[in-house]
Image 1 (tube, rainbow, N blue to C red):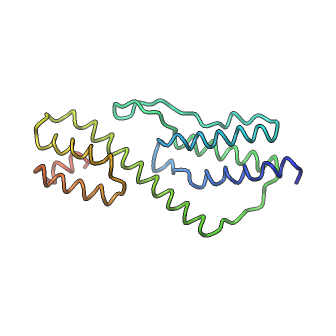
Image 2 (cartoon, rainbow, N blue to C red):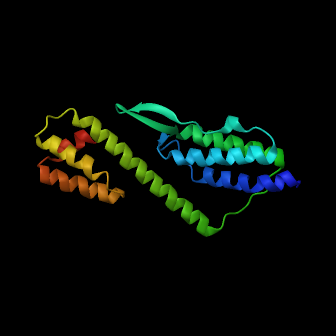
Image 3 (cartoon, rainbow, N blue to C red):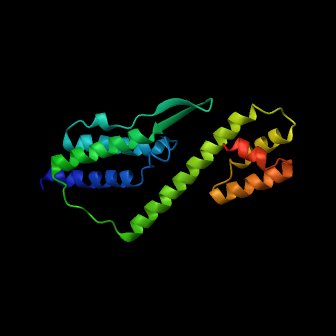
Length: 188
């Protein structure tokens, strides 16, 4: 392997790490953690410097989207995964990185934990956006609106799925809304 290939190898490996922990586009359409795109773009800048080539076409672009009547800055999951995969394949072809590098077992465990945390965060964000949207359908002061207002506030500090479920049932009981209302709010 030539000198440039030796310098590219760690960047290539780091890009593979980002791909391994990328959110599954089949499970979530967008990523709110813009730092993921920034980190990949920093690697692309480093790669450009090391190789003297231009890989800017693989940069991750932020998108401004209206989701549930809220304006958000996001990265689409599909584009994130596609750009990473394309760049990795390009580097693999240019520098003959054909051998498969096994990951140490604890790296896989950490990646799984990271993916799980990201998925939980995405669920909390999507639920918060849904609650904010549905609040407009209920008059202030009604038990339903009180439930949605309090749930929206609690979601700001809730971190796990089990906490979300417990919070929903606790607030529903406190507000006096029943199962039919919960099923209507959460899409059934």
